[in-house]
Length: 307
View 1 (cartoon, helix red, strand yellow):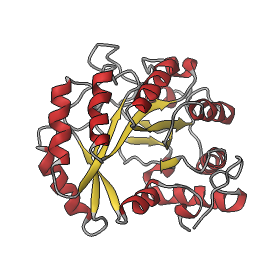
View 2: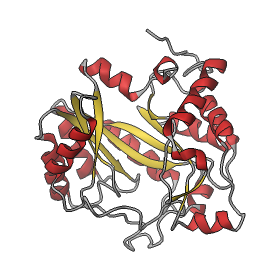
View 3: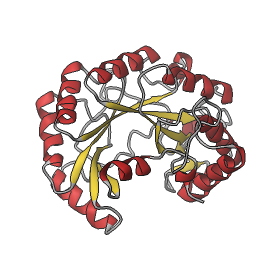
């Protein structure tokens, strides 16, 4: 059972555009986060283990990180997107950003950038830089960690910004031709499926090209870990997650590209849910839900047409 049968996946989109298998290579360029360095706060988001981000690769040149990633993939891809994933990857001076991004783009078979960041950390000068790569023909994605559209939940998880910051960022990014992928977490404290679908409606009302879905993970060292052990926070079981994700996907128009429909974490860092240790069981559960109830766009006016 292939996810591509039911969902407009990033892999299918990239294969259609480049006529090759294209994969992301994750990078660490020694960025930090305003919610950790004291600018907004020092505790970080409640779901985040602020000590879990390894500094091991932070001093490794980008070229070496890319070479290692290519070797690990072997023949699974012919071209690559350089994915600046660790920390807030726009949270430095523009000249530093330019040097890091450019060091990736000059490497062989790199066809573009994915830049992970926060909605409140994308000033115009950063968007101008990313827009310049779009103008040069590179595939450029701005990956914004929103998690939810509900300001009350954003405050509860100590996110440090409101939904209005996201609205501002995506509309300014559109002016530079930059595609936005929005990261959302299903199962946040205090949120049920109703709140999840309200978030979908709100993000679809803004310029949007992609979505990345995650189940809530409880990890060691996070504020939520203490709450979970005290019985104050619940996590979704896999069947419930598959149902929520399936309904979410069915209500998403076919032109939206899904970068991910689930996510994993490793023991011993992962506390709960245990099903998040492995990738394929949850993806298979989502596929089964889509096969039974309809794929992407089934509950919109533009159902997905598989070719």
